[in-house]
Length: 136
Image (cartoon, rainbow, N blue to C red; front, top):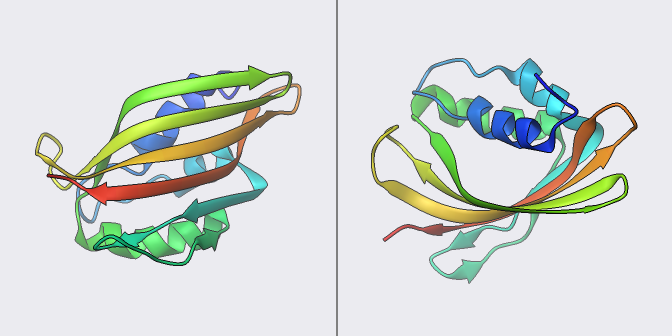
């Protein structure tokens, strides 16, 4: 794992959460991508209705999705990325699609905004916020 390269950090984040139902994810690797104080936030929609922002730390996120991934196959693929750097910080905007079958049709698409921090040695994800829309 190359933590000194933002592309490697982001690509690894997407690959760790993807896989068939019941396949253990490498949660240790996922934890290593995020700063210990990182926050993950989802801005959910339900049938067009905006729901309250859900704010989690990395452990809360893992607990939430691990139960889902035990029962459901899930893959997430990045479609587009825009990265802006300023000194030791970077903002990454990713458009992505989510799938229940690795080569199937997407059931959602979304946009994820991430902020990263370079501590002089490596890049850490310090925040991620995303919103999804039902596909099709």
